[in-house]
Length: 413
Image (cartoon, rainbow, N blue to C red; front, top):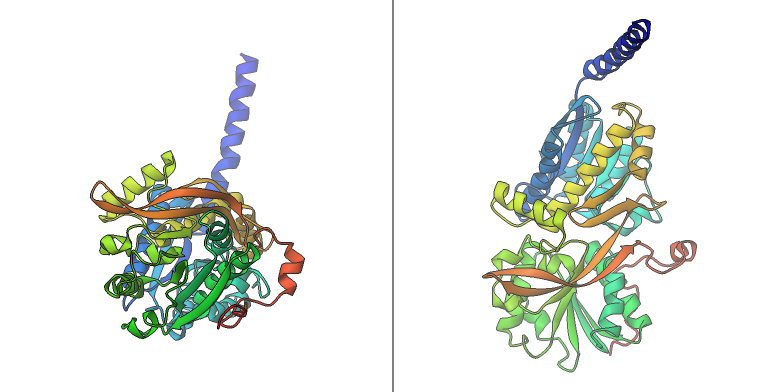
C-alpha cells in the first residue's frame, strides 16, 4: 500500500510540474508565421502552390507544435521586390510574427534578408539565390529549399558523361536565377569535356522567342533551357513551332518542366530531360501518399514550389518542438532549425549544411505521358547533393560567383 501510495504521489507531482509548462505555452499564445507568396500577377499559380504546400504541412501536424497553436499570416507580394519588403514590415511590425517564410524571387530575398536580420526575425526562404547561403549568408536564416546552381551541377556532369553531349547552346531567362542555374550547368559540363558554344539570354517580359530561336546553332547536340511559369509554356511550344523539336534535343533546368506548368503543356514537352530536387512522380511511399493527398485537396499534382514549402513548414515545426515552443528566443529557434532533419519528406531526405542550406537528392527527369498525363519520370538520382557539389567549400567560396558573364563562354564564336 505504501509503495502504491508513493507511486501515486510521484505521478501527481509529475502532473503538477507538467501542467504549468503546458499552461505557459498556452499563455504565450500562438506561434505566428508570416508567409510571403505571389497570389496575383504573372506568378499567381506558383504562389498558390507555395501557400497550399505550406498550409498542408501545418494542417497535417494539427496546426500546433510543443503545445502552441501555429498561426500563419499570408501576404501577397505579386513577385515584386519593392512589395516584398513592404509586406515583410507589415508582418514583423504589425502582425508581430515570430518567423517569416516563403518569398519567390532572389532579388526579393536579398532585399528582405537584411531587414529581418536587423529585426531579429528568423527567416526560412524558398528563393534560391546562391549567395544567400554562400558569400553573403544573413543571420537567423535556415534554407530548406536550394541554391540556384545546386541542382544543375550534377546535371552538367550527367549531360556530358551519360547523355554524351559535346556541344550545347543555352537559352535562358536573363536575370540572377537564370545566370546561376546556367552557370552551374556550364561549369560541370565543361569540366567533363563538353563545350557551351552559345549563350542566349531572353528578357523576362519576352513573349516572342523567334528572335532567339533563330540564332541557335544548328550543329549543337542539345539546347539547355531555363524558364519558369508562362515563359516556360511559351518557350517549349515555340521551340516545336520553330521546327526544332526532333532535330535538336531539348534539356533544361528543373523549373522549365516543373509540375507548376507541365499539366498545361502538350506533346511538345515529351522527351525533355531536366534536373531538380523533386518530381511528383517520385516513386516512394511518402511521396505517393503526399501527391495523392495534395491532388485530392487542391485538384492538381504538387509542384516543386508546393513541396519545398511543405518541407520548409516541416523544418519549422521540428524547430518549434526542439525549443519547447520558445520561439521568442530567435537565435535558439534558428539554431534548432539549422539542425533539423526531415528524414522522410516527399522529396526525400533533407538536412542543412554548415551554411544553413539544404542537402538533398537531385533527380534527373524525363517528360513522359503516363495514364494520359504528362509526368517527370525519374531516370537517375544523385543522392545528398550539397550546394558545393564535389568542390572544396573554402576554395569554392573564393571563386567568382556565377553571373551573366561567368563562367565566360570560351567556346562561343
